[in-house]
Amino acid sequence: MSVWKTISTRILPVTVATAVLGGTLIAQEPGWVKHVPEADRTRTNPLVNQPDAAEAGQKLYGEKCARCHGAHGEGKGHSPSLQTKKVHDLTAGELEWVIDHGFSFHRMPAFDSLTQDQRWQIVSYVQSLPVSK
Ligand code: HEC
Image (cartoon, rainbow, N blue to C red; front, top):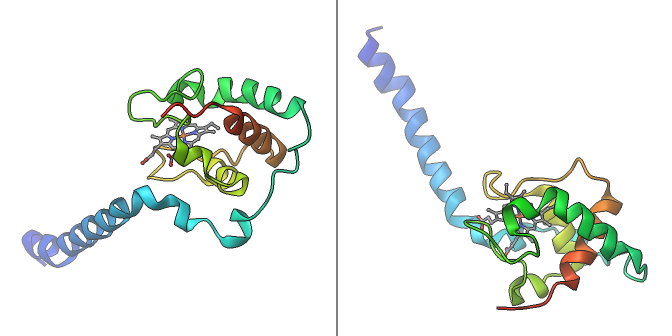
């Protein structure tokens, strides 16, 4: 088989298919919330009545999230503010899900290496942030 034939019959179709599929996924990005399964979305934060949870979450936030989302969740560069009505209106279950899974081709990383309790602590902290926009 000639080199061109290999390119046109094997490599080209795969490249085109990848580009089309990639484009479709990118187009769906902003709607990550709709990918959260109902059973995950409706969970409540088990740490909701623990006063130390938000404090512990703030510490974890400083280590894991602040470099992108800013020291107090005010947003930075391409990383959105977490002090928005949109984030404030998310359920605790949705927030824990997005921290666990990440989205958008890893621009928002998945923090599945944290324990679930640590993710709930971060949820407590994020939900304690003011809504500034
Ligand atoms: C490497 C940078 C980076 C780190 C670290 C990071 N994020 Fe993100 N995060 C992003 C980006 C970028 C987006 C938006 C992606 C998009 O819209 O395509 C995002 C989106 C989000 C969203 C959704 C906001 C919305 O309006 O839909 C939440 C909530 C969030 N991040 C919370 C966190 C938390 C909590 C942590 C720490 C555990 C964290 N992020 C760590 C980059 C980061």
